[in-house]
Length: 358
Image 1 (cartoon, one colour):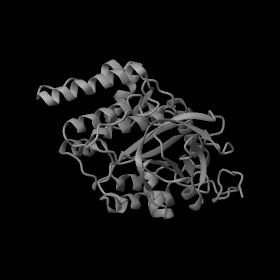
Image 2: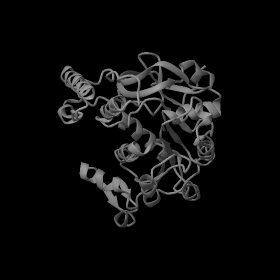
Image 3: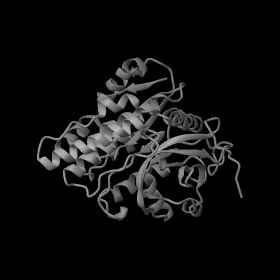
């Protein structure tokens, strides 16, 4: 069954316009179908707040057809936001206290922009720990995206991320290395995932934390891993939720920052993302923009419209399949009375009955 539009969040209308089935609350209430309540802790900055919201709502809405999905977005007050964004959050988002009181079947925690070299210096650090610790005890499963993965690996497992000399940016091929885990069973054993980050957690750090690695990149990086029990916490370093245009918009943002004097270097192209035509168009844009800057004339328009229809999406289907399997597992291990694991005959430390490796 589909997403349920249980409030006036604009995302529901936008997803409906895309062709996704979204059920009105009045209709959903008349159906005797299992509900799953998913929290979305959206920590993304203002410019990406609504896009990230739509991306994760879309993945959830595409998943398990035997449940109705109520997604509850909330954020942290400590994240700096404009007055406009704060008004949007106040009108459409719930508070953590409200989410905590109602309870959840699952939680998604997004990434965030950082301003300090140490994650523990970020204003969201302690509030994020509070949410994550609550979820660890009260929510059957938490899915962490990128920065959230780095944060939890540091404060819960003592594994700090490592800054890299070059940004990992583009679309990269990955391989399933634990085919017995139901999150990745029967999905493509090789598939693409976008990445966009300066920092990484190395494979040996996942091993030192006792985590279960499911998917690695061709460069050895871990994309998907879980807590030892296989479901309580799911860790992502890549971005399967990204839209086709997400990396292009990031490139545009970085290019505009360079021309505004806010960045020292012009951004390189995202790897394995652009074809020859798109690269040529963007190369021409740079030349024209540099000339305009030197002459003090008006900057040319960024050629997004010329490029967008040429871009390929090689990651969404597999990303959607993995999230769908995650939703299916949550459906299996939760009671109709939410927040509790089936304990009769199920090992709380291994609720999925996964094979235990050496």
